[in-house]
Image (cartoon, rainbow, N blue to C red):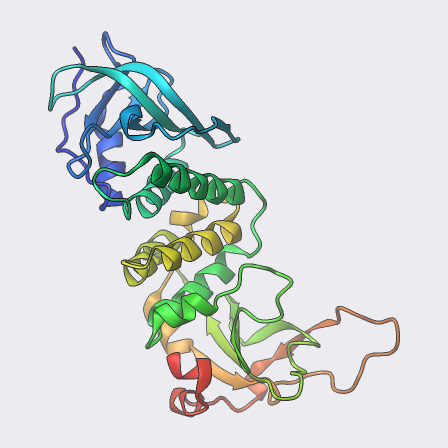
Length: 337
């Protein structure tokens, strides 16, 4: 019999799911899979199948609610599949399970798989009903479907936005105001207050802005957050920021789903950026400056008829920055920074 050499993982600790899977032997022995039961869910297992794929097994007795199987480029869900599991923490287990399988074997994808599994399924009660499981599986599918599309942001731009949220006085409110749609004019907005994050790895503060971003409509107040980035070995990674924001969103399933949805839509299929996109947090903190949209070099007036989507490079170093206190005193969403 093959066996794993790791303690039982917990659905509430995504890192333990990844560690458990990584430690599993490649050979399932006389079983279909090798795995370990979760410490916080009876008869749920993290496993490795014969193809080496990461799998979460949920007992079919808990998921009797009628459900359809799902097949995506990176995710498969099948129900009521009979299989046997070899484990070091228990005797071989044979039963019927719903199998949630990650179809891409690379470490970054497996990491995303278990983190999304944890955030989506951990809010469930210890013994969820079939309906509750079906709803959670549906959310899981939508998140992974989002991740199959191309990313809506550059990795460095995503890092800068998440950094601003993590460093703010109220990360939960900024998460609620965070936009995933690239057609939105600003990265964050609530009512009349809008925040647009600009980042650069250059020596100055030249940022590409749109005419619309620098020309707020009447009643709007717009602030640019300008962040200079410096790559650093061992710096803060996108993976680190995702984990930090997940901790801030903990206890609020809707907010957690929103975080995962915006993050995965922004990242797209660029999973390798999770760990490779890492910057010095101290340098980013020291470089962060705020500017009123009307103060940066911009094109004024209305573009000629038929001219739209005007973008240009603006040197923010020629504008006078606002202090963090000045920004917060404006109220609205700015008070959360």
